[in-house]
Image (cartoon, rainbow, N blue to C red; front, side):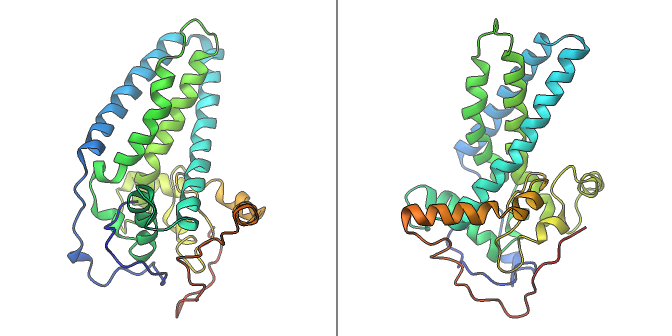
Amino acid sequence: MLASPERVISRRNVMSPPPSPDAIGPRTPSLLERLSVVAFFIACGVLGWKVVGATSGLGGWLAILAVAAVGYVLADLVSGLVHWGFDTWGSRDLPVLGPTFIVPFRVHHDDPLDITRHGFAATNGHNCFVSLFALVPALTLPAHWMITPLLQAFLLALSLGVLATNQFHKWAHQAEPHPVVARLQDWGVVLGRAHHQVHHTWPYERHYCITTGWLNRPLDAIGFFRRLEWAVEKVTGVAPREDDLGHTRPEGSETPAQPG
Protein backbone atom coordinates (compact mmCIF):
# COMPACT_ATOMS: atom_id res chain seq x y z
CA MET A 1 0.00 0.00 0.00
CA LEU A 2 1.67 3.15 -1.16
CA ALA A 3 0.65 6.73 -0.52
CA SER A 4 2.07 10.21 0.01
CA PRO A 5 3.30 10.53 3.64
CA GLU A 6 2.33 14.20 3.82
CA ARG A 7 -1.39 13.47 3.39
CA VAL A 8 -3.47 14.01 6.52
CA ILE A 9 -4.39 10.74 8.23
CA SER A 10 -7.98 10.34 9.37
CA ARG A 11 -10.47 7.55 10.00
CA ARG A 12 -13.58 8.43 8.01
CA ASN A 13 -15.86 6.19 5.98
CA VAL A 14 -13.23 5.31 3.38
CA MET A 15 -15.20 3.41 0.78
CA SER A 16 -16.12 6.72 -0.86
CA PRO A 17 -13.53 8.28 -3.21
CA PRO A 18 -11.25 11.04 -1.87
CA PRO A 19 -12.37 14.61 -2.47
CA SER A 20 -9.93 15.32 -5.31
CA PRO A 21 -8.53 12.10 -6.78
CA ASP A 22 -7.19 13.84 -9.87
CA ALA A 23 -4.89 15.94 -7.70
CA ILE A 24 -3.06 12.87 -6.43
CA GLY A 25 -0.67 11.53 -9.03
CA PRO A 26 1.18 8.22 -9.20
CA ARG A 27 4.21 7.82 -6.98
CA THR A 28 7.58 7.41 -8.69
CA PRO A 29 9.28 4.22 -7.47
CA SER A 30 12.77 4.49 -6.03
CA LEU A 31 15.81 2.87 -7.62
CA LEU A 32 15.79 0.29 -4.82
CA GLU A 33 12.21 -0.67 -5.66
CA ARG A 34 12.98 -1.01 -9.37
CA LEU A 35 16.05 -3.12 -8.71
CA SER A 36 14.13 -5.24 -6.21
CA VAL A 37 11.47 -6.06 -8.81
CA VAL A 38 14.14 -7.17 -11.31
CA ALA A 39 16.05 -9.18 -8.70
CA PHE A 40 12.84 -10.78 -7.46
CA PHE A 41 11.80 -12.16 -10.82
CA ILE A 42 15.32 -13.35 -11.62
CA ALA A 43 15.48 -15.18 -8.28
CA CYS A 44 12.01 -16.68 -8.83
CA GLY A 45 12.96 -17.88 -12.29
CA VAL A 46 16.15 -19.54 -11.10
CA LEU A 47 14.42 -21.08 -8.10
CA GLY A 48 11.55 -22.37 -10.21
CA TRP A 49 14.06 -23.94 -12.63
CA LYS A 50 15.79 -25.68 -9.73
CA VAL A 51 12.50 -27.07 -8.39
CA VAL A 52 11.42 -28.37 -11.81
CA GLY A 53 14.81 -29.95 -12.45
CA ALA A 54 14.82 -31.74 -9.09
CA THR A 55 11.22 -33.06 -9.23
CA SER A 56 10.05 -36.18 -11.01
CA GLY A 57 7.14 -38.61 -10.77
CA LEU A 58 3.54 -38.05 -9.80
CA GLY A 59 4.32 -38.35 -6.10
CA GLY A 60 7.02 -35.73 -6.30
CA TRP A 61 4.80 -33.26 -8.13
CA LEU A 62 1.89 -33.82 -5.75
CA ALA A 63 4.21 -33.07 -2.83
CA ILE A 64 5.44 -29.91 -4.56
CA LEU A 65 1.88 -28.74 -5.18
CA ALA A 66 0.95 -29.45 -1.56
CA VAL A 67 3.79 -27.43 -0.04
CA ALA A 68 3.22 -24.65 -2.60
CA ALA A 69 -0.42 -24.45 -1.49
CA VAL A 70 0.70 -24.19 2.13
CA GLY A 71 3.09 -21.39 1.18
CA TYR A 72 0.33 -19.51 -0.62
CA VAL A 73 -2.01 -19.79 2.38
CA LEU A 74 0.79 -18.72 4.73
CA ALA A 75 1.30 -15.61 2.59
CA ASP A 76 -2.28 -14.63 3.46
CA LEU A 77 -1.45 -14.95 7.17
CA VAL A 78 1.76 -12.95 6.74
CA SER A 79 -0.18 -10.20 4.95
CA GLY A 80 -2.66 -10.08 7.84
CA LEU A 81 0.02 -9.87 10.50
CA VAL A 82 1.91 -7.12 8.68
CA HIS A 83 -1.28 -5.20 7.90
CA TRP A 84 -2.49 -5.49 11.48
CA GLY A 85 0.93 -4.53 12.85
CA PHE A 86 1.30 -1.32 10.86
CA ASP A 87 -2.38 -0.39 11.29
CA THR A 88 -2.23 -0.88 15.05
CA TRP A 89 1.21 -0.08 16.47
CA GLY A 90 3.83 2.63 16.12
CA SER A 91 3.66 6.16 14.79
CA ARG A 92 4.63 8.09 11.69
CA ASP A 93 7.68 9.44 13.55
CA LEU A 94 9.44 6.07 13.85
CA PRO A 95 12.72 6.09 11.87
CA VAL A 96 12.47 4.22 8.53
CA LEU A 97 9.34 2.23 9.48
CA GLY A 98 7.22 5.33 10.04
CA PRO A 99 7.43 7.01 6.62
CA THR A 100 8.05 3.80 4.67
CA PHE A 101 5.32 1.53 6.04
CA ILE A 102 3.18 2.97 8.86
CA VAL A 103 2.17 6.20 7.10
CA PRO A 104 1.24 4.49 3.80
CA PHE A 105 -0.85 1.87 5.60
CA ARG A 106 -2.79 4.48 7.54
CA VAL A 107 -3.10 6.97 4.70
CA HIS A 108 -4.68 4.10 2.79
CA HIS A 109 -7.65 4.25 5.16
CA ASP A 110 -8.05 7.93 4.41
CA ASP A 111 -7.66 7.46 0.65
CA PRO A 112 -8.22 3.81 -0.32
CA LEU A 113 -8.00 4.61 -4.03
CA ASP A 114 -4.43 5.91 -3.73
CA ILE A 115 -3.05 2.42 -4.31
CA THR A 116 -4.83 2.22 -7.67
CA ARG A 117 -2.88 5.20 -9.05
CA HIS A 118 0.60 3.68 -8.88
CA GLY A 119 2.46 1.52 -11.36
CA PHE A 120 3.74 -2.01 -10.79
CA ALA A 121 7.13 -1.12 -9.26
CA ALA A 122 5.69 1.50 -6.92
CA THR A 123 2.95 -0.89 -5.82
CA ASN A 124 5.09 -4.00 -5.37
CA GLY A 125 8.70 -2.86 -4.99
CA HIS A 126 8.85 -3.06 -1.21
CA ASN A 127 7.29 -6.53 -1.18
CA CYS A 128 9.81 -7.68 -3.78
CA PHE A 129 12.65 -6.39 -1.61
CA VAL A 130 11.36 -8.14 1.52
CA SER A 131 10.77 -11.40 -0.39
CA LEU A 132 14.43 -11.54 -1.42
CA PHE A 133 15.28 -12.40 2.18
CA ALA A 134 13.47 -15.72 1.63
CA LEU A 135 14.40 -16.28 -2.01
CA VAL A 136 18.17 -15.82 -1.71
CA PRO A 137 18.59 -18.39 1.11
CA ALA A 138 16.33 -20.76 -0.83
CA LEU A 139 18.70 -20.58 -3.79
CA THR A 140 21.64 -21.62 -1.61
CA LEU A 141 20.09 -24.76 -0.09
CA PRO A 142 22.27 -27.84 -0.70
CA ALA A 143 21.09 -29.76 -3.76
CA HIS A 144 21.81 -33.16 -2.16
CA TRP A 145 19.22 -32.71 0.58
CA MET A 146 16.10 -34.72 -0.24
CA ILE A 147 13.90 -32.05 1.27
CA THR A 148 15.48 -29.17 -0.68
CA PRO A 149 12.97 -29.13 -3.59
CA LEU A 150 10.07 -29.05 -1.12
CA LEU A 151 11.61 -26.20 0.86
CA GLN A 152 12.36 -24.30 -2.31
CA ALA A 153 8.83 -24.79 -3.65
CA PHE A 154 7.39 -23.65 -0.33
CA LEU A 155 9.55 -20.51 -0.19
CA LEU A 156 8.85 -19.75 -3.85
CA ALA A 157 5.08 -19.95 -3.34
CA LEU A 158 5.32 -17.93 -0.14
CA SER A 159 7.38 -15.24 -1.88
CA LEU A 160 5.03 -15.08 -4.86
CA GLY A 161 2.11 -14.77 -2.46
CA VAL A 162 3.84 -11.94 -0.58
CA LEU A 163 4.57 -10.20 -3.88
CA ALA A 164 0.95 -10.62 -4.97
CA THR A 165 -0.44 -9.12 -1.77
CA ASN A 166 -0.24 -5.49 -2.84
CA GLN A 167 -1.29 -6.29 -6.40
CA PHE A 168 -4.34 -8.25 -5.24
CA HIS A 169 -5.10 -5.47 -2.78
CA LYS A 170 -4.87 -2.89 -5.57
CA TRP A 171 -7.28 -4.92 -7.72
CA ALA A 172 -9.71 -5.11 -4.79
CA HIS A 173 -9.97 -1.30 -4.87
CA GLN A 174 -10.42 -0.95 -8.62
CA ALA A 175 -13.96 -0.22 -9.72
CA GLU A 176 -13.53 -2.19 -12.95
CA PRO A 177 -10.67 -4.69 -12.77
CA HIS A 178 -9.73 -6.75 -15.81
CA PRO A 179 -12.39 -9.42 -16.53
CA VAL A 180 -9.92 -12.20 -15.73
CA VAL A 181 -9.11 -10.55 -12.40
CA ALA A 182 -12.81 -10.08 -11.67
CA ARG A 183 -13.42 -13.76 -12.31
CA LEU A 184 -10.57 -14.76 -9.97
CA GLN A 185 -12.08 -12.47 -7.34
CA ASP A 186 -15.48 -14.10 -7.81
CA TRP A 187 -13.90 -17.53 -7.40
CA GLY A 188 -12.09 -16.43 -4.24
CA VAL A 189 -8.64 -17.17 -5.67
CA VAL A 190 -7.52 -13.59 -4.99
CA LEU A 191 -8.78 -10.92 -2.59
CA GLY A 192 -12.32 -9.84 -3.48
CA ARG A 193 -13.66 -6.29 -3.40
CA ALA A 194 -16.76 -7.02 -1.28
CA HIS A 195 -14.73 -9.16 1.10
CA HIS A 196 -12.08 -6.48 1.59
CA GLN A 197 -14.70 -3.78 2.11
CA VAL A 198 -15.31 -5.23 5.57
CA HIS A 199 -11.89 -3.95 6.62
CA HIS A 200 -12.68 -0.47 5.31
CA THR A 201 -15.76 -0.08 7.51
CA TRP A 202 -15.78 1.32 11.04
CA PRO A 203 -14.11 0.38 13.37
CA TYR A 204 -11.47 -0.87 10.84
CA GLU A 205 -10.45 -3.83 13.01
CA ARG A 206 -11.38 -6.86 10.88
CA HIS A 207 -10.31 -8.69 7.73
CA TYR A 208 -6.62 -7.76 7.83
CA CYS A 209 -5.48 -10.55 5.47
CA ILE A 210 -5.17 -9.14 1.95
CA THR A 211 -3.61 -11.81 -0.26
CA THR A 212 -6.61 -14.08 -0.69
CA GLY A 213 -8.60 -13.21 2.44
CA TRP A 214 -9.18 -16.93 3.09
CA LEU A 215 -8.02 -16.65 6.71
CA ASN A 216 -10.04 -13.58 7.65
CA ARG A 217 -13.22 -15.33 8.77
CA PRO A 218 -11.53 -17.99 10.94
CA LEU A 219 -9.11 -15.48 12.47
CA ASP A 220 -11.93 -13.04 13.22
CA ALA A 221 -14.06 -15.85 14.62
CA ILE A 222 -11.46 -16.76 17.25
CA GLY A 223 -10.56 -13.14 18.00
CA PHE A 224 -6.98 -13.75 16.86
CA PHE A 225 -5.89 -10.13 16.48
CA ARG A 226 -7.79 -8.92 19.54
CA ARG A 227 -5.97 -11.54 21.62
CA LEU A 228 -2.64 -10.44 20.14
CA GLU A 229 -3.45 -6.84 21.00
CA TRP A 230 -4.29 -7.81 24.56
CA ALA A 231 -0.98 -9.66 24.89
CA VAL A 232 1.08 -6.82 23.41
CA GLU A 233 -0.63 -4.24 25.60
CA LYS A 234 -0.13 -6.43 28.66
CA VAL A 235 3.60 -6.70 28.01
CA THR A 236 4.33 -3.18 26.76
CA GLY A 237 1.60 -1.06 28.33
CA VAL A 238 0.93 0.53 24.92
CA ALA A 239 -2.72 0.60 23.81
CA PRO A 240 -3.53 -0.50 20.25
CA ARG A 241 -4.27 2.32 17.75
CA GLU A 242 -3.35 4.78 20.48
CA ASP A 243 -2.18 7.48 18.08
CA ASP A 244 -4.55 6.90 15.19
CA LEU A 245 -8.10 5.65 15.53
CA GLY A 246 -9.60 8.18 17.91
CA HIS A 247 -12.41 5.71 18.66
CA THR A 248 -14.98 8.02 17.05
CA ARG A 249 -17.57 6.45 14.80
CA PRO A 250 -17.66 8.35 11.49
CA GLU A 251 -20.98 9.92 10.58
CA GLY A 252 -23.03 7.67 8.33
CA SER A 253 -20.87 4.60 8.86
CA GLU A 254 -22.44 1.22 9.45
CA THR A 255 -21.32 -1.93 11.12
CA PRO A 256 -20.20 -4.19 8.26
CA ALA A 257 -22.27 -7.15 7.24
CA GLN A 258 -20.37 -10.34 6.51
CA PRO A 259 -20.12 -10.70 2.72
CA GLY A 260 -21.27 -13.87 1.10
